[in-house]
Each structure stands twice: as C-alpha cells, then as structure tokens.
Length: 82
Image (tube, rainbow, N blue to C red; front, side, top):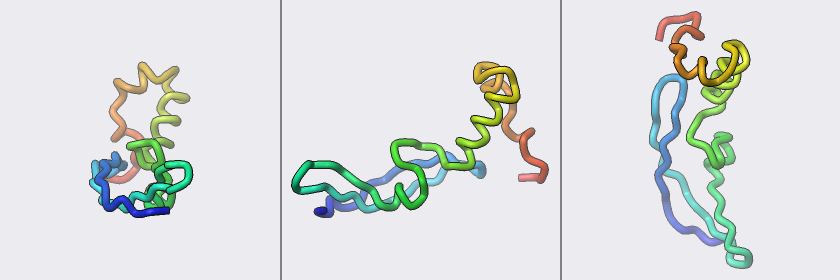
C-alpha cells in the first residue's frame, strides 16, 4: 500500500457533524483505495456514524417506515438532554 496523503470526510454523529482528516492508501497492484481510519470507526462508504445508523434503523422500524421517520424529530429518541 502506498500513501496518498490525507483526505477529509464529514461524518454525521448523534451529537452533530464532525470533520475527519484521515490517511488514504492505494494498492500498487490492484489500485484499490483504503482508509484505515474509516475501517476503525466503522464508517467505510458512509457519512453516518454507527450510532446514527442505529437510530435511523430504529426510527424506520418503529414508525411504520422511513418516510414517516424522516419527519420525526430524532431528539425524541434520547432520554437525556443534549
């Protein structure tokens, strides 16, 4: 793997958006790109944190579909104040 430098990515978390700068690597043989930081944080090929993905799945399953869930205020899922 050969380093291609740093790349920025914005991740939506349950506490708001964060911007990451992470290393990007390219395989000299097949050309595949990897971001080990994305793999570590479980955000490969997504802009949503694992916590937000769980909330989206929960909202879609509990509120009779994702269309209605999209209109629901996500803050109502929290039992503590943010």
